[in-house]
Image (tube, rainbow, N blue to C red; front, top):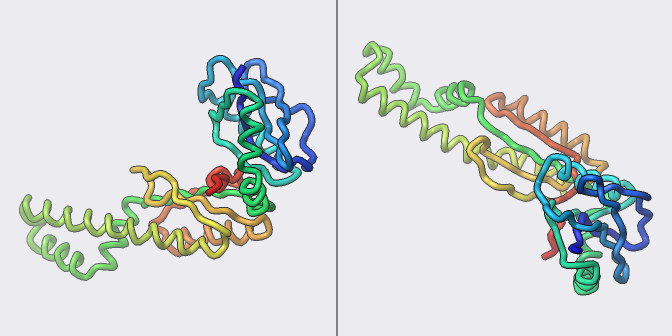
Length: 239
């Protein structure tokens, strides 16, 4: 039977007993050891689907194991042919995995997504651009202007908002970067202008969250959503 892998920890780390993994009923989690490392694994279900139940079970195993020390979390869906293959991988990458575990110790991941509040950002770009204000006033003086003039003005505003999106993506990253040990850019999306993951030491987390709140308070056209603390999925890759 294939082996499902949740994460990797140091072999000397005290791990919780009787962890329940994915599957219905939940499959028991066991440890596969190689040298100074241990992988948290279970049998892999015959059909592996990203259902909410199993996504939460995967997350729960990683979080509970991380309560006693750093864990390199694998993303949902990590399947190996068998335990022996897991052992071989641990042995092959032992040094780099140990280095990464040291780097992640005492740190968590926070994901920050920032987006524009449509009406607020429009007001912001109009306030900050004398040329746009002048065109807007000319249209008002002309009773609204022609259809072509309105269309051209709308395109000018849209271009200004797009430029502001790029500038604000940099602003968010630079405002929060001082409170994190590392930053990763996540997938782009149409619903946000910035999707960033920050690796934050636990002693810095209150300051980090204060900085997140400060971004919105100082830039009210921005909506900032923070999720965390999370297992450091975005920082587990070994280079």
